[in-house]
Length: 84
Figure: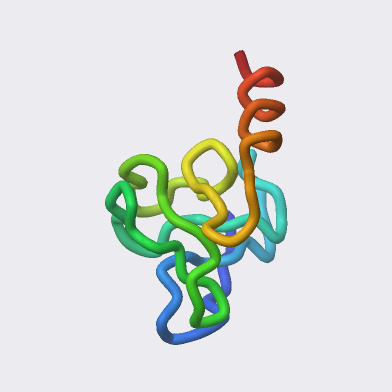
């Protein structure tokens, strides 16, 4: 069974702290449905935006979010190339 931790009351993601699934420890999962363009909240602050609708319980990572603070075009290109 996968176990999660909520770091801040305002967070819309949980952190995986113990996993038997294919999501690594320390990664994020959606605590609620997150619409495309909506902010991803971790530690009570926005860390990026959803690039597509994310269903509750879904893995939140480079494939469905982007940083609002750092250019991510190289990360996005590299990620997409590895997962084609």
